[in-house]
Image (cartoon, rainbow, N blue to C red):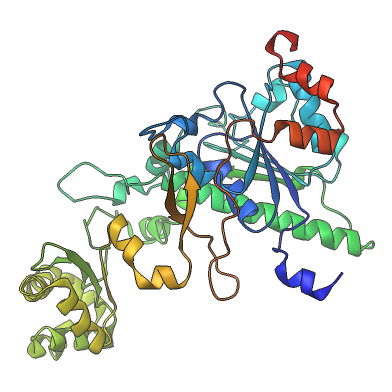
Length: 417
């Protein structure tokens, strides 16, 4: 293959994914794979499509949430509850490397599209499944969204102020975490598949082990750090600490004179001393009773009061300039408008403007770029989430060779049974 072609082709060029998912979790995994070159074919219900199309819909027929989560994909409309729809899916699986799904366990099996049926037509298929509690265990059949997973996974108990009920973090973090793990698991199996192909003496993975099983609650649990071991070893029960994090001080959000806020992380021993000098408290910088992080946590209220008195008398720009001079980690708490105006995001192409139908006047709208960066800046988004069924004829004619008459019969509701 030509070296120049290798340089411009994204890493997953040549990988084809069939996405049978709705909402955020599986579509996030599909987006990550699509961002880096995989051809992701999203199967949606005729007429309504993925329910995400109407979530946070301010105008028009398709939300910007859907456009963002499903960028760089193709959309085909098929009814998996019908025999023709299922036959088409199985025919497509013959041409795919991966199937992504996030239905309740047992749903694909009831439709005749379970693992055995999929691997009968494609023995090398990687099957990635996302569900609330996983494909096994006593809770496997329970439904659940990210909110439930964040609660059961231990995160919700840690978020918010200590004198108020637990809070959310503002996004569907449980779904996003599950999507990240699903993409990672998919890539691991694709990598192992290539090893199996090039190492004939090594026994290949069994079909069961080529299934990626991601549970929303487990994805959340995995980011709770030492929550469980601290409980088991010391009987510790973590509590909500607002803008702080248990056992680390000073690290919090602090108000500024102009109505904005900053986050200051002064919890390293050396950093703490620099911070205290910068805010005019050299005696605290040298206080032997504040030498370690554990010591500072005991006096966190005193330290936060001292830092907050300093920040509230200055503008955000003044605070950040002074702390940068002192080599103290700090940053502004950004709004969406701040992000769009930020030079660092702009330099790395992290807000990309694309034309999109907003249901109002046609306009270009900024969307978050592709992470991680390969090279010097974020790769360009090829296109936003597609219209419902936009690629049905293209995909089914090119991959399956269906004629115009066959396509018309398939998409005619009265002809489907």
